[in-house]
Length: 329
Image (cartoon, rainbow, N blue to C red; front, side, top):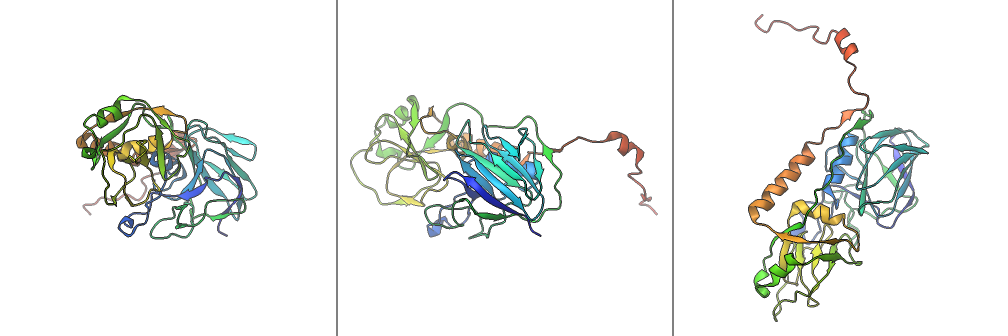
């Protein structure tokens, strides 16, 4: 029988997310996907999945699931997120098996915004346009999680727990940006102001955008025809308060874009809660491309080890090369 996860309680921001819906933006479809790709990749690595497999993403609040139908291997990632199986706490950076009838609980996110719960075999909801990611505003990919939601688990024969230490996390420092396609719509000092001041994450922020609170950066008079936007686009509406678009952003917009957050730093920005203060730093294209490549290599290199290590004595006692023949014969 296929294992199923039954949601018993969750916050309003819990959903299924994977690596995102690629190739549909030209049709007006948001890419969606996990807000923090490093945390998603870590949880999936501990569960034995590809880094972009579908998992449960939480937002600030915790989550409780009940296992039905068969055993499941769980792994959690995210800043300050803890996991328990029934009443047993699971150490950070370790995956754990839960059997039918057991409950798996994720704590609220203590040091960020988003947590991730991966299962061996991945969350096997029905793909839509090549992805299982939920887009809240359109309903593409399904609905947000609620008590009573039943999540099927993909087939997986390997349920051996894995561990990874130290647990990787995001670097510190300013969020890096490049000049945007309409930076010349602003006064010459606008980019200097953008990187010289400290910004605050506004309370309206969500999966679609981070609303910034700080000095006004209104563009010079004029209007523009809507054109393409991407996650990371830093739009400036007439109010002068910037909006940084995130994973669930629309595909076009009519506000001029002063800058673009580089892709490697977008996950780190996503983990900054309302009220967090941060600065921006201007970088060139070569730096942005190198940072993206470094992040991709870091995710690909996540390699947890089986819990318990290697039994060297048993390996030495076994005939591991029996049957070898001379290739010249």
